[in-house]
Image 1: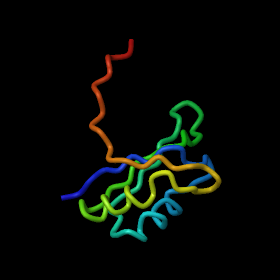
Image 2: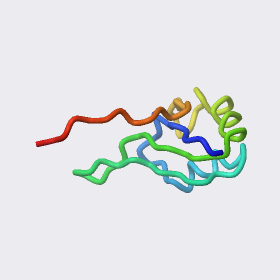
Image 3: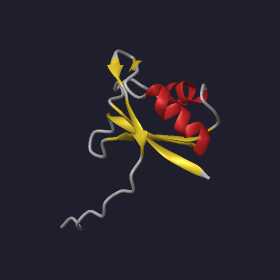
Length: 88
């Protein structure tokens, strides 16, 4: 099974390749998705990394509160997205 990991407080300059390299130290990275603003296309400073369960737990433990690009990362297991009300 794989786990989705929330990665917050990323520097806006971070690339998916840099985030993948960071997490790859703890196991096989299945995917990386950095979230960008729909209007401006600029990075929003967070994203999601998907890894195998055991590797994900190691990465979360090792990387939460670590410095990356001058910012303190927030790393934890991603929670399912809450349903949002429809936009009119």
